[in-house]
Amino acid sequence: MNRTMAGLVAAVFLALSWSCDESLPVYVPPANILRLTISRIEQLNDRAAPPGRQSVRIDLEGENIYSDVFYDSVDIQGQVFVWWKRKPDRSRTLYLTQANFVDRALIANKKMLLEPGQKFTVETYWNMKSDDSLYLVNEMNFAGLRRRVCAFNVACSDPETFVAEASLKVYDKIGFVGAEAKEFSFTGRTYIINP
Image (cartoon, rainbow, N blue to C red):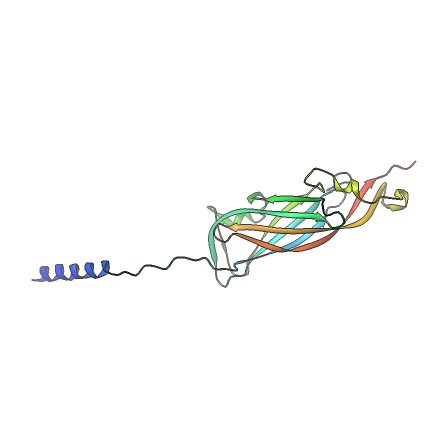
């Protein structure tokens, strides 16, 4: 009788478990997980980027603003768009990939875990060339060259204002996150030869 009873209980349990029409809810990734900011824009010095080959370093900082740990697969893609305020048609788009990701130890097996408040950095360098390969320092104002000496055998242009805008996709399921545009000043430098 025990075997019969056990078989009957098992049959009733199976019938009840198959008769449930409820399904699990569809996973919806939370909104507002990351905040992206342009944390640093720095004109490199003459040793790192001498006149004629000047560069700018641009760092983006991402932060987990979600109230919980977030863990998902990553696919780092993005861009930094830089344009000259005085000549808006002069611009450059810098594309970002996982090679620009500074904190590579955070990514394991193509997945990344971020605790609440944890940050990461993505960096890129801009060689002062526009998308059509014009070296923009050559278009800056160096009038009165001999009166613009700012270092030994170096003359400086008028400071120019540029604007950087950025967007970045880190996690597969979240999509692109934008950063607030940030203005920065750049001073062109050129060598001069004393007569």
